[in-house]
Image (tube, rainbow, N blue to C red; front, side):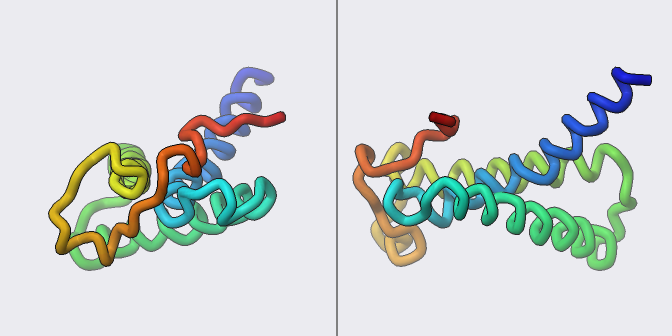
Length: 119
């Protein structure tokens, strides 16, 4: 009983925070762009918007059934999109110069670390 409750809260926290956190890293990779509470809030808001929106598009447009696998793959896709965007913006991945408009570069020293420091 307790293990189910703990795993349920952990799953809910993961779904409501992690995809949005990686999208937040992609949109706002600089340390000075957002402070901690703003980054946390944007992470939850981006997760609450992006996951249902992606699942709705997959279900209505591409007729993908809403099952556990489709939800897990959607979460993984959102995390991957945010992570790739973050790595492009901090210049760990190079892209053609024609895409610099979509991915403005920032200095690596000014970037937020992927794993947040709670201090």
